[in-house]
Length: 132
Image (tube, rainbow, N blue to C red; front, side, top):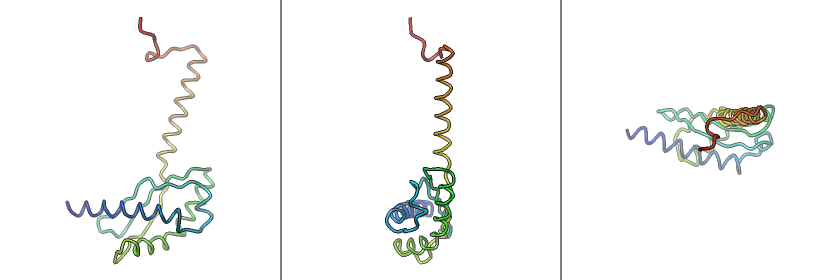
């Protein structure tokens, strides 16, 4: 049980420090061309590997460039995390695009489009009927 809490605590610290480094520590222009937010951090039980899920707001081409910049900076980030968190051996960092927010936005857009089409046709949904 204590091992699980330790991994969660390290993941939270990695998230905090990586967020700070993204804002203040990296000079790569590819990373700063779009809004990047860390959505989740997964750390292996042995603390040797770390997946950082990021959401990137922007065009798909911009997202690819940002991911390339993050991958290029992963060695620097690993060293900084090791130093800041005072770990003997910092985990290997891998960035992955989190498409959950994009999927959610896409679903909301589809729902809005369906509602608009219903209004245009004059259909009334059951939840919009007036109570007599």
